[in-house]
Image 1 (cartoon, rainbow over the protein chains, first blue to last red):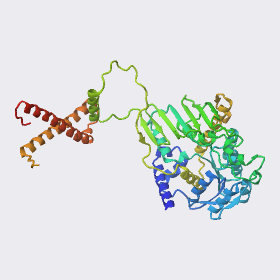
Image 2 (image 1 turned 60 degrees about the vertical axis):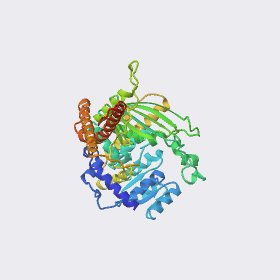
Image 3 (image 1 turned 135 degrees about the horizontal axis):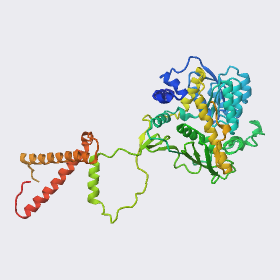
Image 4 (image 1 turned 90 degrees about the vertical axis):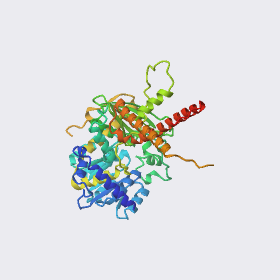
Length: 437
Length: 81
């Protein structure tokens, strides 16, 4: 039953996607759906996939792929045995297990593609190895821990001619795509500012199982189990909030503004979770784009009241993409008869002011907003993202526009981290700009 | 407790008052559309408010009538309003 519901939900999403005709001309992956407005976007042949990294995110991707008839998970790879065993079990023991991705690439020559969902610091090496082995690659965001590694990944994809898709599922989320279409149509006018935030109230720390790290990984890479399990908290493996969360929202900001920031400033600190972590527990940044438009970003881990949101503002209105709502700056007036009754009521019962107000406070407008999309969808785009990947592997699509999005999202996340670490205003380095892309 | 008889004349009179209240409410809707430059479709989209206003106006008229009738009774005059 759940599977049927999932399929129905997927087909509903595909139907919604095919309505995005303007975007279909711009986004290569969407063309596949627009040209085939049914579930028959795939060829008959199954593609053989090797999954590298089957932890929390990898396992979710695994479940989505398992549900796609055209995908066969032929191999799974993880250095952590409990994850590896779970994945083999979930594949009905059909997938061959590996603990080293190089061995998997050597032994499984017939793999068409690999899906990488490992810790950030390993993305570049594994991706480059897989691309050079002739595989089509899906790699979770962010691309790499160093800008130059991200650039190497892009260059390798171009040199080998293979697909490199980066996991930014908002580009596959119908709610976001409809919002992009409305923005293109000028619904809120020229975008003059974006505010994005991601607030959580949790340490992000996982409980560390007992054991010797040497049994799982190279001890030179991870000094102990704490670093191995909680890699997101240490700078050798991650850039914390910037690479794990901000890159998603900066990708959206870059896409909407049609560019990448040229100037970045920010400040971050560890002001709450003083537990030995090395990455900031709160970050605050200002990204300036070539036309002077700014994206103001912040993320924290000590309060979740405001949750996460991308607020897009223009002279004619506002959009909140996570909430899926928009507001106009000039809402339609209340019906005349209500205005009349209201004015009579004020005339009768209001106090007579002694002097007129010299200013009116700019308090927020209380308005429930208009839904961007009337449909309520369960998937955040991850399922469609996996469908899109399988489709691309089958058809030979390269999704270079998505790669460009993934690249700049990574770069601005990393430069944001650099701005906070150095306390300097960072300008986009010329050598990191993709030319002739 | 004795039976209350509402005569046809009384019923007709109350219906006329109700009709008058409705016409006044409808007219106020037209007036507000003109004053506040809103859409003419509000003639039917806001019909619910017109009905509510009709009832309110009828009650207001009723109260006024009862007051007038009370005052008239004090002065010993019989009014049929």
